[in-house]
Image (cartoon, rainbow, N blue to C red; front, side, top):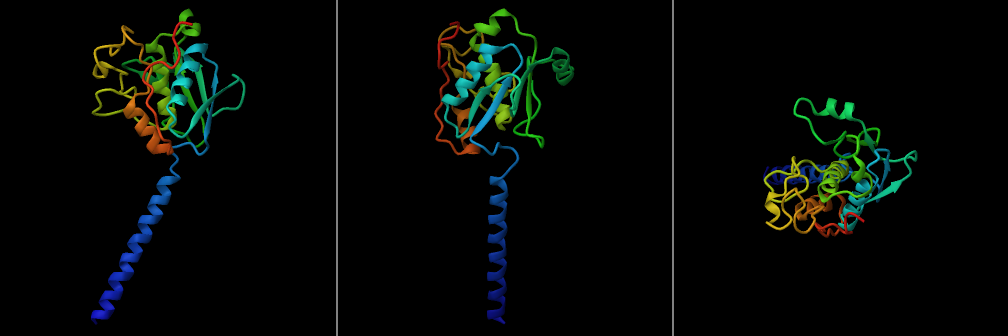
Length: 209
């Protein structure tokens, strides 16, 4: 009887181990992450320089996946568009400056980043605050949720930087320009995509040029 009981316990343990292995495999193929090493971004928004800088910021972080800008009419997984009416519809009643239609890939493998109409400087000479806004929305496109209980993260719901230090920590771009993503953002994306991760919170290229 003891031998039979032990056999049943061992069999049950094997079943549990098998279930855990299957669960881990299912997590690795989660639809919350893009399958390939490159996510293509088609920009139809008119925020040309801002989108380009946000792509550069994420690519400099080496999180295990890269964005690649393609032509506005080319096939892409992420589409950046300017549509104030759609933005207002998404963000009622509080309003917002930008919106990502999905967190990670949808079933149709497309994410829209919706912006308002750009003013002149946002086309060619973006501020760090503009770039942070796009870095935040591209973070959603990668599969990142809003950060919780973080002092300094571009994925905070309001893209607040009060916890990033006195110099360059505010949204008015005083001091060194901070574009993100920050350490906590890079760690979260690296866990999702397996990259080595390297936080590059300062703008990788001088803004305004």
